[in-house]
Image (cartoon, rainbow, N blue to C red; front, top):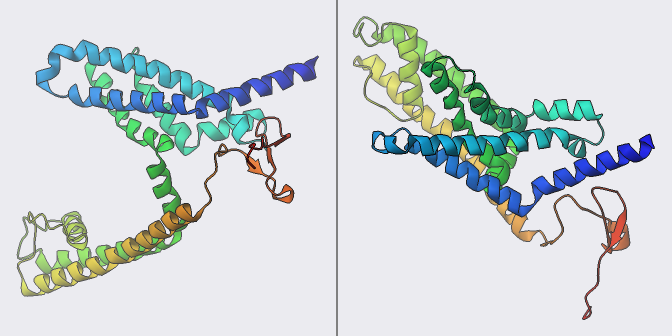
Length: 288
């Protein structure tokens, strides 16, 4: 009897996970996120103060759905981490990237009822900007960029470390070069780091710049090195991006869900159900 109950419970969690992956649920949550973001943006305009109650209602309704979604994903986490126990699978989801984002998105709704001051409520509502990151789960473009970053993570880290060393060295050097000529601009190393970063990134806001000959030479050196350093990760990312697009175009199209696993030993006549693990034969067309 207990075995049957556990089987039914696992089937329920599998169906719950399948429901969250359906197209209409994904679209509904995506539109809800976009509406909530639009309401949060319009709420900052004084011209729309008349509709603040409407915006608050939109936030409350969307937060209810986000909270339900969050707990549904916790319950169905075992489906994603089948090699772990139910407790470990749920713990892994809660502390995963998307788990943390989902929690932060429901946090304003939960704490708003316990906020004692307006300042606390405003600070908590700041967390709503993380709704943009929540879109990454439902956007193929975000997922593509994420996969590319995973592939080139090591190269990006190497370039980032090298760039940090260059910025730090030039910032300290510039401080000692310009501190006597411009004590109000280069009053500490922090000001020099600000100059080094914007120069290295070739932004150049113009609020702080060297005036001594040696300082200007160092500034030119920083700008050139910045262009070269930024070009390296940009070319690496672009080449991997084009390779990923070509792989996607070359891959054969399939109407099967992404969670199905083909059995190549049967010449793709079967696929394995992600819920029960049984082999299911394809329905052949009459003209085949």
